[in-house]
Image (cartoon, rainbow, N blue to C red; front, side, top):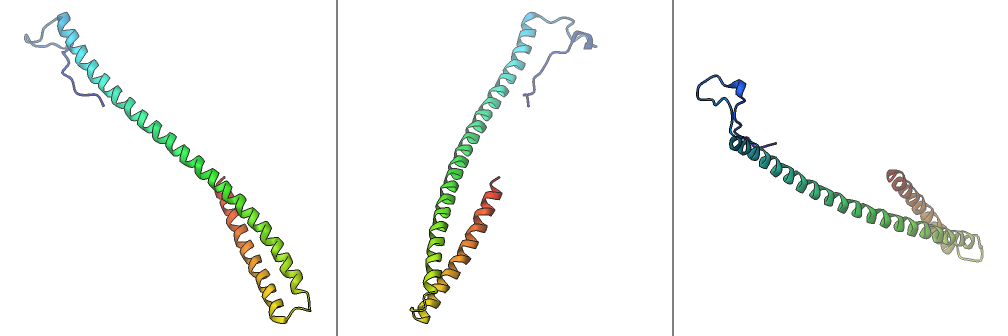
Length: 135
């Protein structure tokens, strides 16, 4: 808060002979000046802190905006990968139905499709969680 200052007593507070009944203009100016300088210093300090806080907030908002843009790019890439994987899973399913292929090949195609389905389910859940948490 403000710095402590030695203020002159008010005339009606004087009870002793050592207390002047009236103050000279120089005494009043000196008293007001000392109090004013202390307040000016406090205001300058507060303004400096405000500017620092404002700059920190602006930097934080820039980082937040960059993180949101990156998250959106990653989400779009994940959606594209899910779509491509879905197409490949459909191809694997259709090939696994071809009885002219050997049983191990058909089993491998079906296993790849099942693994894709599991990975897609996990990716969908992660994307949904991130979308929900971001709002």
